[in-house]
Length: 105
Image (tube, rainbow, N blue to C red; front, top):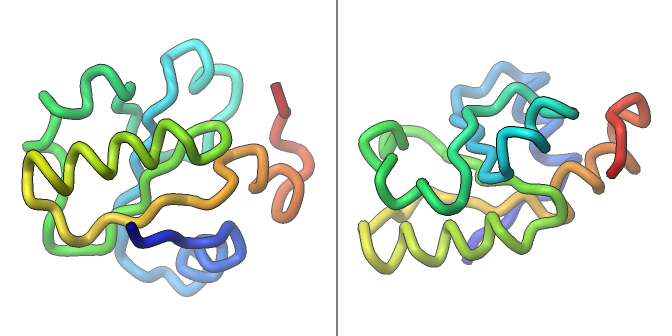
């Protein structure tokens, strides 16, 4: 499974590199804090594949990286995606290393 660090994602965003950010947390978590990604809760990600791009890098994130890893495993094995990366440490790592104003929970 491919992974991307929060520093690498921050650089990707700063450079304006086209990518898709998918957040597989629950709606209440997303409303508490988010990085502007598309909300696709883990339980629904398999039914949302038509919204996941195959032509650009896709970063999948959650709170700590566990749920996003499960989502990626499912999407790769069941749906053939090859362009997915897991955000290592999730939004908690983002808050620790990139933006301390992001609330931790």
